[in-house]
Image 1 (tube, rainbow, N blue to C red):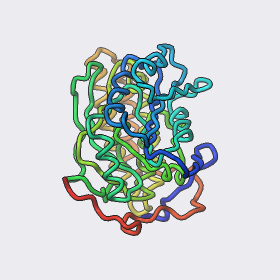
Image 2: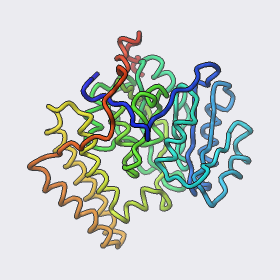
Image 3: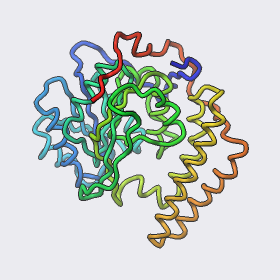
Image 4: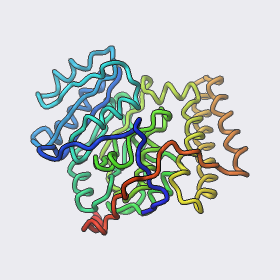
Length: 342
């Protein structure tokens, strides 16, 4: 636990507590925007795992889609899925925060409308959190294309399921998280706040670092979720504009705020190198597609990363206020030890 790194939310990002009486164990919230062609697969996976349980709420939150996801919910929701559209277009990150505020469950899973869970996801994540007492659980992911063909599997950060002691250092330098792989206790969001709307591409990265800075994270060493890559995704749009590399570079200053001061210099430089590598990969991908102008946008960001190496990253002036309540105690103080290896 790192008292100097802990944070509580500003009003803009606050997640208020909910009444304990009668609340479900699981809140599965599915934010969606113009991806109805994938939503049936998303719902089928969740209902396969949780459809017979009575301690679950499953909600599709639609951000002004034009492809009528309500029809998909009606056809595939089995009467177990609530459809709750935004009152107006909010954008992805503000929609995530609305999901967190609506969620009543003890465990919250934000599952994008084009992603999927694999068999065993909820059972494994629930068990890992119960055994470890951690603030959040992260599993491995499989990247898939629009037709569910496997593209890549994320690496393991420890052998077997258990507490991830270096989660903060590993995640602070590069985004290692696939969004469908994260389950968080709602009390964690109540303490540290919701997603940062000023980081539309890397808000999930900043969140994963913030969680790791405030308490223990358990790593589930199994591939249990699918992250979809397709032409209509927000990531693909930002690839053409170069904003994903630019946001990674600028967000580094914020992730460094979550580190103890003595580790910021070295890890900041590592983060710059990772971002330069990421931008170079994006540039090469775009050149191969014949999109030279977009490639140059990424290479400019690469040059800025390399140019900053001598001085390193200067932490940003944080917009998150110091804590007014103590952080969650470490897992050992909450009466739980490490999860047995599997």
